[in-house]
Length: 258
Ligand code: CAA
Image (cartoon, rainbow, N blue to C red; front, top):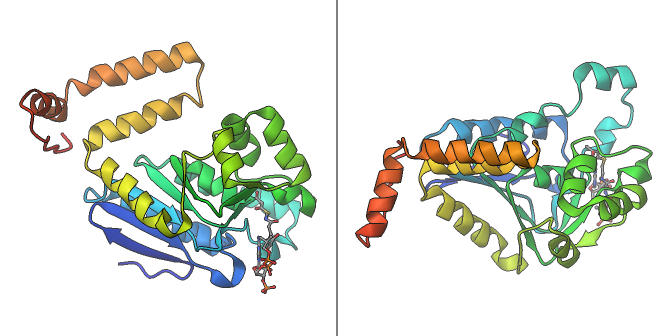
């Protein structure tokens, strides 16, 4: 298994677990961490033995943003030429579902990384925000776009323009997080959600993620047509035959990913 500096990587049955691990910097996302997270996540994405991934941080911080100290002397041309943070697009393009388990701070790039995941579970201690404005910059990993789609214009504007943080309750009310769980149960609950997904037909899971993802990228009529075609395509799989036969025969299904 690959050696990592800034993350911990484990397998729990069919679930891949990535834990951000820079305790000295509240898991600030430096370039090394970005390469490691993207690399580890892509490895899980390619691994047939993995059905879903959980991404988490520490109790105190999911991640407190991009690494400010690493960025502070950066010049425009360096950022532009390197297309800084474009590598995170590969994380957002993973095909298997990723559950974010967020405890403590999810700020700036931390909030943006959580929003790249497919399901966001928050501990009751979670705090979300886009405080880049206080540093004289703006979100750079998708915050102005994904937060706006998740919580609407007024709240996204307020968070991006004032840097105010919102707690887990407000984030849930606003539709950013799917559920709040007590901090002590967060990881277990996220692993349970991921294990549930990993027990489904892997083909149907890929299609479901792709279909919901489409809703963020296309007009409704196109998205509906796309969904219907993927739905039709499901009837070409053995898993559809097995899933429906198992229902009719009142037994659990045995999906094979075919
Ligand atoms: N980058 C680098 N180091 C960071 C960091 C970050 N984003 N966030 C925290 N740290 C470091 C601190 O510098 C500190 O290190 P030292 O002990 O060496 O001084 C350590 O982590 C602990 O942090 P604090 O002492 O500040 O902890 P606190 O409990 O007093 O405050 C906090 C917690 C409110 C989260 C505060 O750390 C903070 O405001 N962090 C920065 C949040 C931020 O602005 N994020 C946006 C970054 S820019 C970005 O993300 C751009 C983008 O869109 C991609």
